[in-house]
Amino acid sequence: MAQKNSCHKVNITSINSSGFGVCRIDGVVCFVQGAVTGDELEIKIIKSKKNYNIGRIEKIITPSQKRTENDCPVFKKCGGCVYRHVKYEDELEIKETIVRDAFTRIGHFENINLKSIIAPESTLRYRNKAQYPVKNENGRIRAGFFAARTHEIIPCEDCLLQPEIFSDITKEICLFADENKITAYDEKTNKGFLRHIYLRIAEKTGEIMLTLVVTGNNLKKSDELVNRLTEKFPQIKSIVLNINAEKTNVILGEECINLYGNGYITDILCDTKIKISPLSFYQVNRRQAEKLYEKAREYMGDTEGKIVMDLYCGTGTIGLCTAKDADKLIGVEIIEQAVNDAKENAELNSRKNTEFICGDAEKAAEILKEKNVKPDIIVVDPPRKGLTPNLIETINSFGAEKVVYVSCDPATLARDCEIFASYGFCIEEATPVDLFPRTAHVETVVSLVKLPPDDVINIELDLTKLDISINDGKTTYDQIKAYVLKKYGLKVSSLYISQIKRKHGLEVSESYNKSKKDNQHIPQCPKDKEDAITDALKYFKMI
Image (cartoon, rainbow, N blue to C red; front, side, top):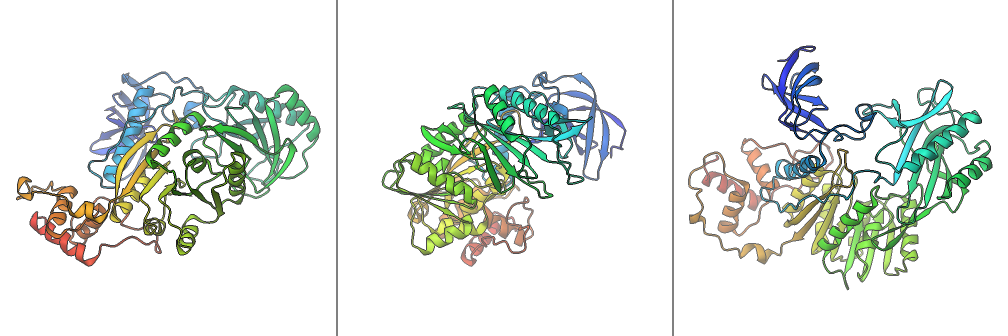
């Protein structure tokens, strides 16, 4: 076991989703920030735990061919970008591997049809939104970004992911605040006025919205600030005060006061006009969002004459952009302001075949089911925590022919897809999309198709041609499924197989069928399928 402060010569064998290089010392994994696959390094152990170590680079002995020069002065402090020291083609490979590994390790899918990741035309200046926390420093207000895993503000003159004009506007606001003795909010003392400078730009129209997150509703010389900013930056079409006086880490409060403009800006996404207000969700990379939605539209197939349900619809962007020919679009979103925006966006685009409901996705879906709504296609774009098992069960009960799942977290996506598989859905195709170059995040869109029972039972399979007479410890889930299907005419999921293997004391990778919440409902293997799987385990001499 490597001791703290000890030095070691190591070879980096991989890089994880947090941008840490991975190596092993005496068989124990060690994570090294700033390391790249293929690096030969001298490192110092700065944290030593029972199951892992964390090392710091002391010297790069032989740099990896995948390494590139970092072009950001605050890269190591900020934490927003984790792959800026890696060549971009290798970053794409890392992200594609992360998605594939999640489906294999967490979802237990052995042969997924995963397409190549969709890359952007540029990795620079792609973000249309920035939220700058501010602080008092030597009698002046400074803006920047929170350092990784802290609330320490790292001043940053110009972020390479943001439009240059954001930096110019931010500097002007800080200058105005200093001139008028407007104080920055201090979360430790809960005192001060200005908390965040929040900027959004509608890339297609060029319109900019400025939101100042403050603790009160009376901004000193607000008219002077409005005139000063709009004269210097005519692209600014809306200036808003957002009131957040709570002692909280949440950036935005619920109340907005318009100082200038209509309180929103308008962008065009997939030939669809979209209103964006301070509280609206809108993808931060418009050009890549178009590619993401185009892939989702491809996976949805022909929507003409069909009912499309869009759960977690936000301001309606996915549904409005992808289901233009649908007989009806039903959107569900829990944030009231977003629902109002979705309704306005539908009206803005003359879409009369829409209905947007404010409510929790799980509860709203159950109500729609009780009303006998029968969607043909269901689209889901949940937050990082993914779907609940109850919601997946409700989605299955609608009997929709297809589910299109847009995800920002490969782990919860793979977990949920395994549950979908237990209901007879199969992954037709999946495609990662790099919406956030140089950061740890990756989006994925998946086409899930419900297989009719006849399509499953009537598969012709000759077990005599499979070399499965002797279990060599490498029997696959697909072989077990094939055996059960042929002998019993039953389709079983990887989730069910894992449950029965665990029941018989066999080793199973950690997965979602071990619930972390007391009240969480996990689909349990029915008795007939349990008996069939048990027979298969005996056949393969696993028990």
